[in-house]
Length: 352
Image (cartoon, rainbow, N blue to C red):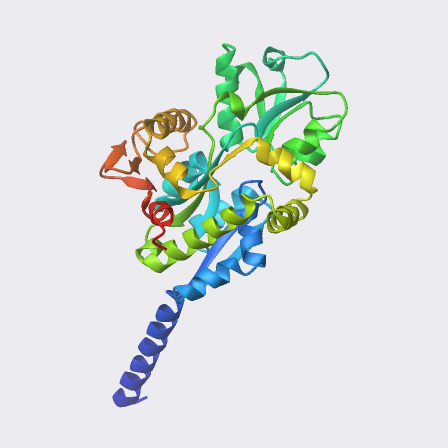
């Protein structure tokens, strides 16, 4: 093969790679899993709202559902997706701890009863969990809530045994004779609470504002401002539909209910246990508050105790978490999780 041909082949390969790279910058993927506060992403996708905002900014956005919540985050972490729905703790302990610089682009809500602990039998309390097994998605926000619940009655995880159970399997597991207690989130929580002869022991309304539901975006992908604007625009348009009481709002919430395996009444009940930010202004205020910093202090402490901040992490401040106003919790040299109010503020100001 002559030199001239090799040079031509190299140029052709480089051109092809650059073309693919250029194309990839205009195409983005969002992963989501079933949860009351994330169903709007499915509706926004099915109703063409995501496409509308993506087209406005000259990009393409694909929205993909996962049945397994943790797997969706894992796929985001390895780079298969540019954005993913997840909680504040899971954003810290999976992508951020894995070295993926991630930004909480949209804070959609916080759980205010949507996460809970349910056990079989009546008249029981948290102290009755001593010596038994508790099934949950290990090292997830459910695990965090269990630790917070136990602490409220002077207990620790050493008083019981945690059994790792996928969210896809937890309802079926609770229906068997082998599982006595589960910790989970809606709509799964609603299903287990509806089973006969059970007792709810604790829920997230007792730690308000600590389980935060977000859309997290790879910070590098967010260098393309079009992505942030399109996602925020699609989200808040969907929120404006949901917040109404007209036929459009009912139709939207009915679609979300059916997609999550319930009916409108069931979905409305889940929304009652969710502090949704239907407009951007209160979400911005929440993200700028000191309460979010305090929550993340609790989360980092729990995460460090369970070895979730990365191999060799010397302490709970190993990973830096950035907040609006250039506030940083933890290491300023290792910032991997960012609460960014930029695009929410643009939505609040009508600048999208």
